[in-house]
Length: 533
Image (cartoon, rainbow, N blue to C red; front, top):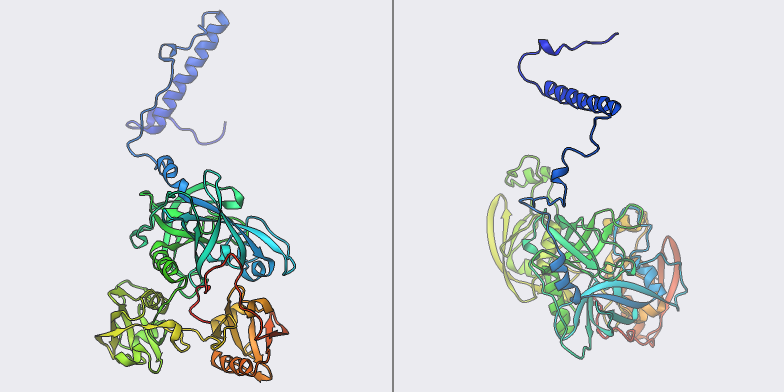
């Protein structure tokens, strides 16, 4: 016999191996004894523990996994499924939930993969929503109902009611609906998303793949996520399984209040959930919905600065304080330029100033500043803390209106085709947009950032993401030039001829000034929520 031999007698003191070996030997001895006894006919067939037989009643652990049964029963009556009849061209332009996004976050209102449809056909899309008032106001995502000609809302008890679109806001992907109920409806309240912390339990309720009333649970993974879906991204990231059709559904904390609206997932293959979902914070929802309810559209604050992130090298050059945490990036928003006549210029902000605090809230980045400025109502007096030449300073200013501002980046606005309404919102072709659209450095033009449903531009076939390269015979490279050329064409009562670059292919689109800017029947809101016309 080869191998290392272990002699128990030579070991000193008790050991786990000794105990295990002894127990094992005893067990073997018992089995052997039983076998011997069986051979002799003396072994009893009844187990020796027969006197303890009966129902096993384990004791409850001191700490249990949360049970959401009671909570779900209370909130489900206020969670609804939404069915929208949407124009096929709006579905194609939205790109939400259609797959093939290759790992990018995307919205997901559609329960099934759909083949391309002719633009004059309608497709049925499904999403989720929730009631926020007894008189029938319902919150959902903008991409669930954008381009819809008919919207219906189905309640947990099976009741289906037609819905009217009160207003939409594409920049935050929120929409407000209204149903005409014959009695007061159960509704749920918005909570405080600012109080939500990573690691906290959350519950999602919605209509994934047409399966209404589906409940899933998980935890908050992170806060303040910017996934480049819009200018004011500030998502709550969760690992609760959410899928296509969950769009617009509520995200609850254990107190039964809504802290987010489920809106997008990250999926490498464009398929279902992999545990990375995103919800719009309830603080944003509250601000947007209040405005949609009152006016049908959203106005945003305007500061008038173009800001950029701060690298460690820039921080040293600007004599900024060293971050307390080793390896952390410098926080703040470096003012690259100030728009003439803007609130920032009037208050005395200058290029090279570093904004560190806005109205009592820390500013971590230019995006952070943009989100905070946009959330302030125009005309509000705010305080701004900044560093100039290494010296901390503070000033007070009155926030302007983004809708009437000149084109700027962070804290500013986007250009628009002004005058008679074509229904398009325009944006300069920035480096980021150039990369997103896959355009070469030699390509120039103006990006269509949004198209109002039912507008002349929409009916002519203009889509978000189109690049306007020329109006008539004039090449264009900024929103102001487009606006001036469009205004001149409309003043002459001529169709507006646009040369468009779409998916690296050039085409011409003519928009007639006689084309009525009528919205679809279901969309009673006079604006799609954008600040631009």
